[in-house]
Image 1 (cartoon, rainbow, N blue to C red):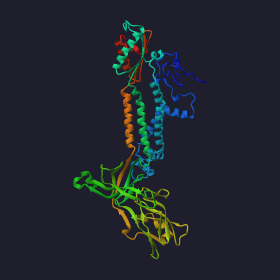
Image 2: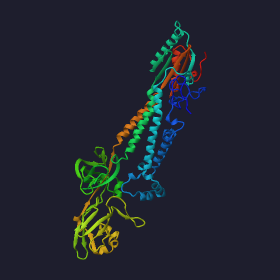
Image 3: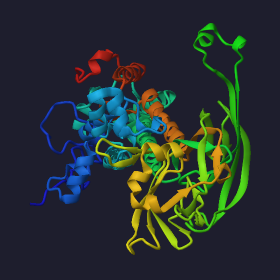
Image 4: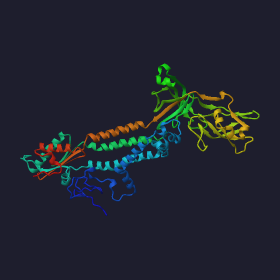
Length: 562
């Protein structure tokens, strides 16, 4: 069935149009007498199609303001839930599966199980933000394009039913004395010209067509909500861009003294050349600290050197080629800054940290040394060779521990109690190899019963260091908070644009006044998107200065008596 949307004025409207886009005549309730619904000037929107296809159904879903509100409310609720307990990213070197249960009990365990401990990095939270952004885009396009089409093609002489069904309207005779010596048509034109002048003094842009007039001002305020949407879209897009590797980072990294550490997802390496700390003397401390015998740090700093990788950056075999790009002493509240990367002094650890060991593999019975292994705690090799023996790395646990079932795990990525599991092959060993566990620290070797686990291999081979010269230890560890946020400028731009849109919508109102004179009778209608009291007052003032005495309250859907 073909729907006829052609108006009596001759304009062909889109299907679903409520008011003629040209003359404003109601197309769907021509016999009604209620105030016209002027939302988007009655133009058709894509979301109002009668027989929507699959793409239209998706469009309709995201163009719904109700759906947008639901999405925002759901996002706010899960954001609140994400702040009940601290997020995983705020801690340094914890096992979240254990921490939340031990610290917060059953509720903490449920909190971790539901994934709320990493709410703001979760895929479903990012999906919610993406859906809100999509809804903003679709809602805006579904409304702003028809609205622009309606406002850019306004006809000056509007249909009588359009004028009389406005919320603010007037109908009455042309006042006596208006162009008394002229004909009726000339008198109407003189009165219209006078009204146009009065409206121009109130900063209206006036368009006339004989005895018809259209005056409007502050049309730009109608675009305020959509400019606000553009700002929010940029804001949400910037937040989503934080998930791109290298665009956002907020993590705590350990930098042992004298060690070069790679900053993940960046081409940078940072070296802690020297860590210094100064404590308050007893006489400088309060009685509370003196009575507890606590050492209180006065100042601590990291002499840091930042390097940028220039070649072999991701080569697992070759050492990276580095170039020094920045050098700075990092103290509390004075971070290292370089091209968007910031390193804040966060914490320190005065316990020694193992960096590297060079144990020798030897025969326990004969004392023959087969070779020396160079094992780095930060980057152990996959294969080590010592004479006729070969050790392939199967697992590495920087902080070795056993769970309730006796399964090995690591509590953190720092080499506090390092443990290595090798597969060793060589003389007297099967061709498939045998497992061989190794703990560099003697105390760990005894606690975890290394020789008992290795069994017969422990009676045949020994892997240990000969002296402290074969051990590299860092006396101090500096913890730095590494931050990168390349999306922050876009977040500020989005926030600024959104604020401009809010100001446009809050402080100005789009006001329009239409009038026409037919057979010495004036018909006037006025519309605004808010502050009806103001536009009613302006219309009353216009009529009073044009010789028509009228009560402002009578302009609200009342027809003046002849």
